[in-house]
Image 1 (cartoon, rainbow, N blue to C red):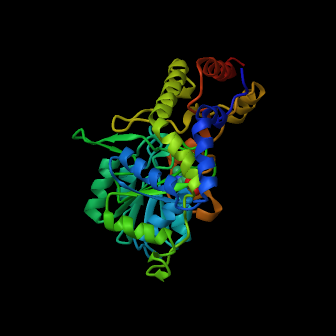
Image 2: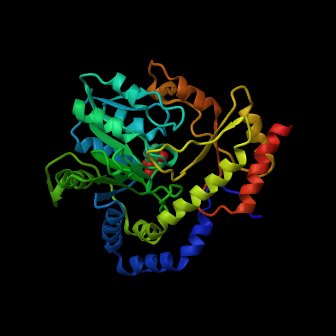
Image 3: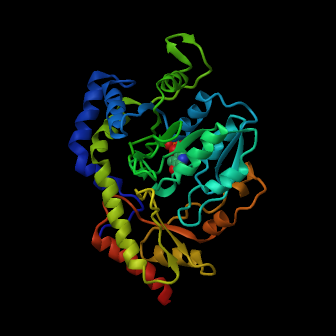
Length: 373
Ligand SMILES: *Cc1c(COP(=O)(O)O)cnc(C)c1O
């Protein structure tokens, strides 16, 4: 058996090598490194995949979040509500723009932002909600969208971990993650479900005027060259990265299907243990398993488990060990029992589109043998 990786990008590349290599050669020959045909094609194809939302590529997922908040004209001091249990980028850009991050606790079953907590955190200064579709499953958008409509708030979806996930509304209508709010933001960091070979990101919106403004802000605030109507940034997806994304996008659903298959394998194998809680799949969203994250029973030694797995060559990561509200840069008072518990108990196992039964079985047996010690 090959050495086990959290994410296996080499095997995925081997399968697409010809397409990617020839696409890269074409870019090198044409020298259209910025805004070349590959970028235009990617925008177009991803837009179709998402059901028609406009796609504005940018340099990375963090930039996407920042550009979204700039495009919505959020002003210093405006409050933006987001989850306490997330990757730092979400809160970082809020603070960077001198907005006020208001962190709320998450749902214990899905790890996603809890609409009741959001409702309780809304004040007259609240301008936006940023749900993060954590680990590959959509946050419960319907109650969030209702709250947003009632209080006239923007909704910026952080879908860096959930590209390809589908949300189902109560009336049966379906939408792709990132296309339900005012703006969706994603990342094409190599390890994401749709990853390039460097940095990349994109914004999605169904509002044509807003799309225009986002394009302008991502391009130094200009829509006509050298005429700057807004303060912007420089944030581009380059053509070489677009080549990789064009090669992978047609396989995204299959990749996500493989992740679900691996997750089902893990969950079936762990169902009989009383010291592990397997991920729950909400009725309103499918799961694209950016991460497969278990909870270890309280009181058990997570570091000992990690050491046990490391000795068997099984990688294991903690996403995330510290709640945002306890980070030095983002300290705030509040009640966060769920996030605090998750930060103490979660661990994530290898998850990617190339896992096979032999590897999964080895990982499962490795985890289970921890209890036997
Ligand atoms: C990866 C990630 C980001 C940031 O994306 P970058 O491309 O690394 O800037 C933002 N939010 C979440 C939830 C992420 O997982």
